[in-house]
Image (tube, rainbow, N blue to C red; front, side):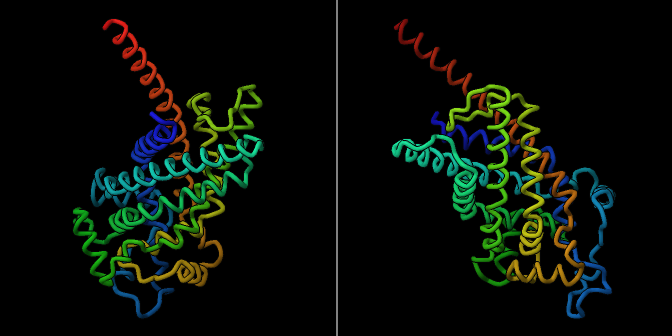
Length: 324
């Protein structure tokens, strides 16, 4: 298996495992980030459904309310769509990121430049990879967010949700709602993975490991070390990009009346001030850091497993040819 395919596959599978573990936090943060402000502060032309929407102040009230109304299964509403979106997004991201990184590495070597990557180079490579992957994953993200935030929780068929999205304005482009802000948000995984690579390089040097500059050196770290570096990296990126994350969720919410992320940002600022742009930050960080920590931990372990399996298959094939 090629290094690029290995990185894409292990990244996607690790993402599925990580997102399944912390999915209730993903649902909670989506509900908090997309809810409207108190009724007295709402515009008079809002629908009664929006005015009667339950208001939540913290993640525990959301969690208890969901369990009370829908039981424990309610906290996993929209899980299949979210996992599918995560798998496609991460497979696409790691695939294009590895390809771009390998291509640029060969280019640097051909020009006899340093084989290590600067922070700026890592950021640019990450943005390119994330931008390409968003073209394929945005529609799945829209369906997943609509499923999580829909007032009608009985609608579980993904085809019904897709029809609702299309019927709202009758445009196929509605499946790419929030695409522009998604492109801006490509800086989020870029900051995350760049921070991770920088922190990993520092850690490897401090512990006298050899960083080849191109190999997946996460396999040299323990699960705990990968988890810690992933957590720190995600905290950094979340603090920087939270306003854009909130605006994207509001754009992709079921029945959203917003058309641009700038419109969402202005609305949030007028309704709650500057801090309202960071609404839902606690569940976002909790979900983000846990997913990122588990993702890098699982990815490192899956990389080790794939290499062991690959070596075993090579040995088995070699022995078979010798016998024959």
